[in-house]
Image (tube, rainbow, N blue to C red; front, top):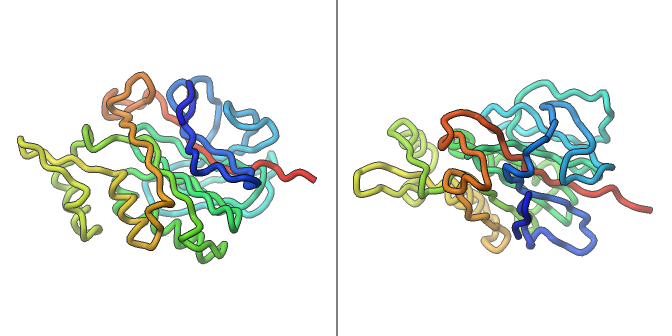
Length: 247
């Protein structure tokens, strides 16, 4: 569902799971003071008792796993494009402005992940690698993991050139399923479809994958867009985490 500031996914709601999540909009982003690599409290849209952590993103496939409680003095120096945690009271967050934010939730093993995927990270397999990490590190089973693909540059607007198509064809055998060629010969990439195809190929059930079908380039009222604005005027924040347990 969509509110004035954030977008949430009904399929993530689960009685007793205590999971919190959102895909942010440009309105939500206004006034955010989140610093990369530094856990902070009091972020808009997040419970005041929870930490929020965002790190430097480098368009790679490495994941930062946070499996301990955080302290105010913690600093995470380095670059990662996926954050994974099983710690209650911690929201892991990614920042996007056309790239794809992906949120994962395993209610059985009580672990969550937030992923930043541009075309480089998607082609290199950041989503399959993160799913494999959930399985190997936390014992997750793919049929239990819920995946939500958030707002990003849509196939309607995301034109790509030959170097991107070359990398895509080398790294993804079914690349023609996620590329549309226009009448003028220009190619448009469906990043959301690419990520969905990769998750399904690994064994994630279709019913466990949801997609927010909004294009960040089209919807100037809702989102920042690097492609549309030709520079970084701002980024949206998307996050997921478990509330602090009570009792």
